[in-house]
Image (cartoon, rainbow, N blue to C red; front, side, top):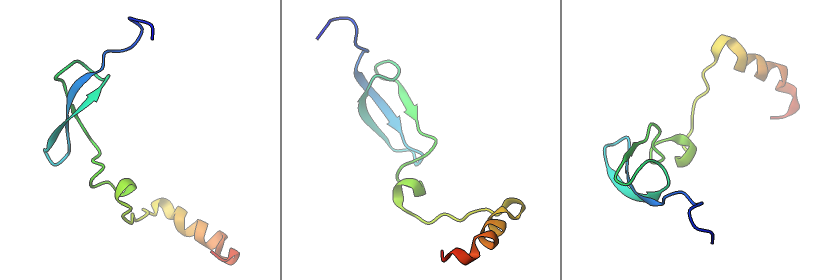
Length: 73
């Protein structure tokens, strides 16, 4: 491995949206910096598998459903 070409790998604090903090090794920031998450993987439906509701802005969802109603979805 060549020297002086790799980023500094150090410990940082990660602050979740609920206020809990944990440490992780990262190349982000400087040693001891704190990264505050805007989207919490413990509560976000993309990670929890929760069902999300579609907002029908301007009737787009209903237009789509009407257009493709006969395709057997």
